Length: 159
Image 1: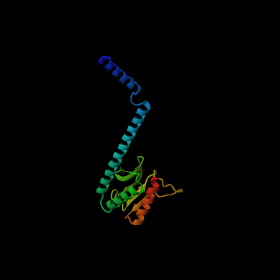
Image 2 (image 1 turned 90 degrees about the horizontal axis):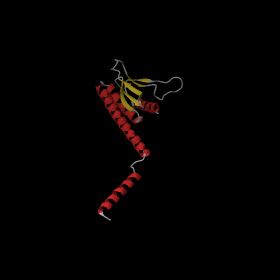
Image 3 (image 1 turned 120 degrees about the horizontal axis):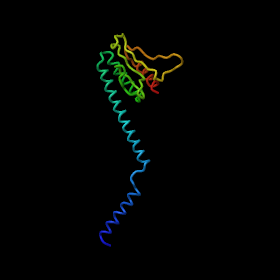
Image 4 (image 1 turned 180 degrees about the vertical axis):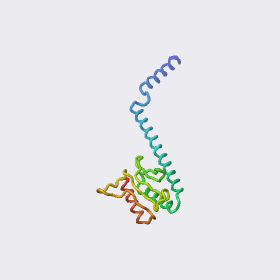
């Protein structure tokens, strides 16, 4: 057998192997595309959540006392009570959203020259109880009792 025939045989067998194994199947390629889209969506969500958090923290830092201290504490309460909620600003106020929709928010009393700050819930909050339920609370200061009540409400609202 001449070396020429041997090379030809090797090329032919390599081509035959390649035909048998063309790489990934259509199903495998589709699954990889889906996974890539999932990873991109997760990265976008993480980036949006991080951007939202930095925006909220900037709004809180710009507040005057005592609203700044309350907003900082409420931010911590919301994050620990309902970690699935994403921080974002809403009408220039710190807010927390589920699936892009605001569930609860803090409004500085100084923003609208009110005598108290407000912690409120939107209609997306899961707080429906009977025919009447509160959607906002006036805050002059936070004690352990108020913090516990707000934590429970946020947890229920996000459920």
